[in-house]
Length: 178
Image 1 (cartoon, rainbow, N blue to C red):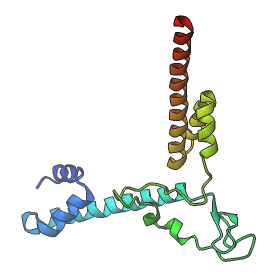
Image 2 (cartoon, helix red, strand yellow):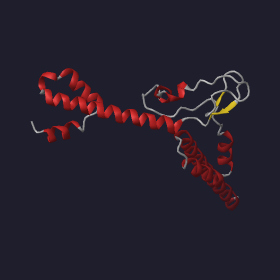
Image 3 (cartoon, rainbow, N blue to C red):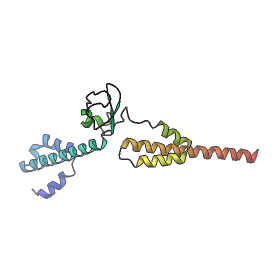
Image 4 (cartoon, rainbow, N blue to C red):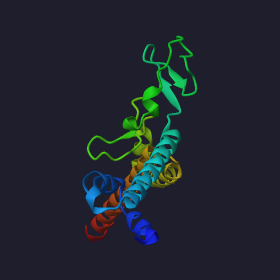
């Protein structure tokens, strides 16, 4: 067995593929190869775990609502600064909180207490230049939720510009030929 070529080959496999090989094809590989597969699985699981921890730390909310008094608290607080209720933040440290139910993809979920972007959307539609600026600012954020809202602001600014151009063309055409 050429260890380097075998390691190169299994480095292209996903955790799922390697686990399937490890569970179902033990008779096709030597003990040394099975050990290399198991080591690669552990290595990938550690990388995945580290990536999930980094994702969670990056996407922790800035503030949370107290379930008792509905007061907004900085995330660092362990108790509500308004009523003293002990805040339970465990769900924010679980990767399941961030998983999209449909695809299993990990995304930062929109919190019920997250700020509303309705005002920014209306301004983007009414004043396209402001929409482009707001969109650019939001696209520069680290949070994927805010980035998606930035894209929406830019799209609304673009739609508003197109609508204004079409209406202006109609008015000019009407003035010239009537």
